[in-house]
Length: 491
Image 1 (cartoon, rainbow, N blue to C red):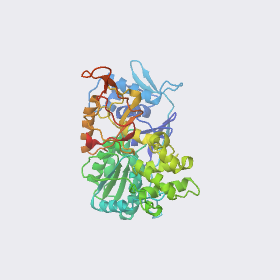
Image 2 (image 1 turned 30 degrees about the horizontal axis):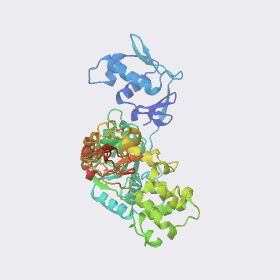
Image 3 (image 1 turned 135 degrees about the vertical axis):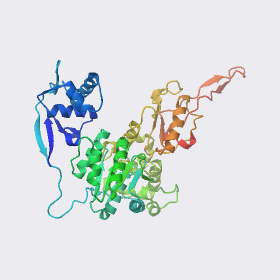
Image 4 (image 1 turned 120 degrees about the vertical axis):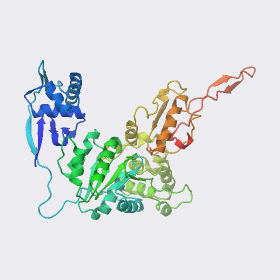
C-alpha cells in the first residue's frame, strides 16, 4: 500500500513514518509538534479549532491552551515561519489555527520484494579498503552471534567499531535467510527517528502511533541480522527498539555499535581494543615492525596517499613513535598517514604534540566526526549531560580559562603523569569521583587534560626564614603541559 507524502516549500512530511524532511534531511521535531503539524497539513486551508488540535495531540490528557501555544511556537521556529517571507501557520483570532502554505500530495511506494525469485538479502556496503589486524576479532564475534542474539561492540571513537561490525555482518550473512541489514544512526538528530530509519532500511511503512510495535510485528517471522551502528547519541531509543524486536522476533539477532553499552536486557558486550603495538626498541627491524597491525595500517594508508612511499630502516623509529603516541587507534593512524606527504614520517612524529591541528585530513565523504581528531573528541563530549560534563573553565583556580581545556574523550592520546583527586583543583574533585563511578557502569575511561603552558610556580616569603629568602609555593601543583589520558584509576 502506498504511503502519503505532503510536500510544502522545501519540506516533505511523511506521517506514516513520523518523519519531516527539509531538503532531503531529517528535521528534528518534538512528538507533540509533529502531531500538530500533521493535523494542520492534512487539513491545509481549513481552520482547526484549538480543542480539535489538543484532542489530536493529547488524546488522553487534559491540557490548557498555553501548552498548545508553546508547541505551535516551537513548530513555527523549526519551519522558519515568518523568515524570508515564508508563511506556514496562521493564527485565526478567536477560532484556531490554519495551515496556509500550498501543499501538494505524493504517493510513495514502499520497497517490495523482487518478483524474479531473487530475494533481497540485506544492504551491507562493500569494503573499499583492506581490514587490518581484526581477523581474529571478526571470527570470534561471528561465533558469538551464533550463541547470543544481542551483541554490542563498545569502544572509543575511531577504534573501528563500524568496520568490524560490517565485516562480521558479511561473514555471517549466509546464516540469515532474510539477510543482514545495516542501519546507520549517526546522522539522526532525534531519537524519535530511530524506528523510522530502521523501517526505511527494511522498506516497510510503520504506523504513526506505535512504530516500535509495527517493527516488531513485521519482523516476527523473519530470520535476519540487524546492525544498529552508532547508537550512543540515541541510546535509549536504540535500547528500547532492540529489546522489543528481540522479544517479538525469536529468529532476529542484533549487532550494535556504541561508545557506551546500551544497558538493555539480553545484551552481551565486546570491548574493541586498539591495534597491536610493537615494543619500543632500537633493534626492531623493518620486517619485525610490519608484523604489528598498527604499523601495517599506517604503512598501507601512507602507500595509498603517496605514490612510491617506502618505509625503510631510518623510518622505523619515527613510525613506532607515531603508533605509540596515537595509541594504535585506527582512525588516528589513518589521519596521521594522510599527512606524511607534507611532513614525512620524521616531521610528523615531531609535530604530534599539536595533533588536534595536525590530524585534520580525513576523507571528504566520511562522517563529520571522523574527518578530524578534534571532531571525534567533540562528538563524545557533546553527548554528556550538564551534570556529567566537567568544568570547562577554571574560575577560582590558579590556572586561567584560556590556559586550561579539560574534557573527557575517547580519542587517542599519549599517557601523561597520573594525577589523583588530591592533586586536582578542588572544584574538579567531585566531578572526577563521579567520572570514576561512570566508568564502573561502562563508560570509556579516557579524560583529556590540555594545558597550553605549565603554570609558573609562585615564590613566597618563608615566614620562618630571615632576609630575602623565598620558598616554592607548593599549592601550585598541576599536570605536565601536554595532552593525554587522565587515568580514572588514579582518582
